Image 1 (cartoon, rainbow, N blue to C red):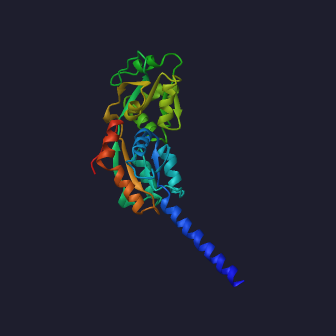
Image 2: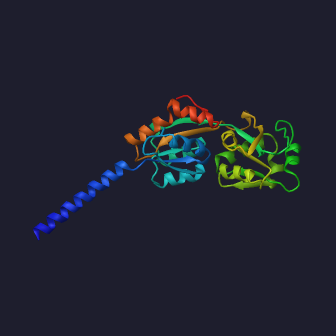
Image 3: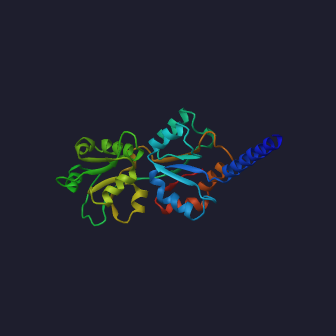
Length: 258
């Protein structure tokens, strides 16, 4: 009996050791705004985020913030605006000392690559309505919760276009979904980030939105509470490295000073 008990104890110890090794070997997880997918995918593929590459989870910043606040297994969180990082901070879901502004972006109006539409965003709504045609819709991310949609609404309100265009909108769960509506020609126009347009050759930029028509587009990053360890710190440093910055620039992002 004692021998069996001893063997059981050894087995439990061995399983605990294996679990510890597996935990150490498991790659970290980044919860990132959907617009970051092309750049982060390249960074991971090129080995610039360490080995093994981190697990990358993409969605709207609003959805990711709520998951982080509910103790989802994320090590780092990158939001496409300050609002949802602030929300995560208020819920004590991030490590405040690790928070920094990683990237910036711009807002643009896009059309399918073969479009002949022209739009003057600075002066009139009529040219945008004309470009939409009689039945066309304007693709945007959800304007009440998704950062790209929030910025889009701010711009359209500031430019005096919101009321006329709201009935003509096709609202999407995130900015990459809005981009895809234009790629598939389901919508003749869309509002996305400059980085989205850079990543997709099947669309073209008709016009940038004036920078002063919306709040600055900022991507804050932070380590998630309970995951402040050497692995997460190394991953955060990799995102801020000179090589990572060069990749972000190639994908249309502005790199902010640290």
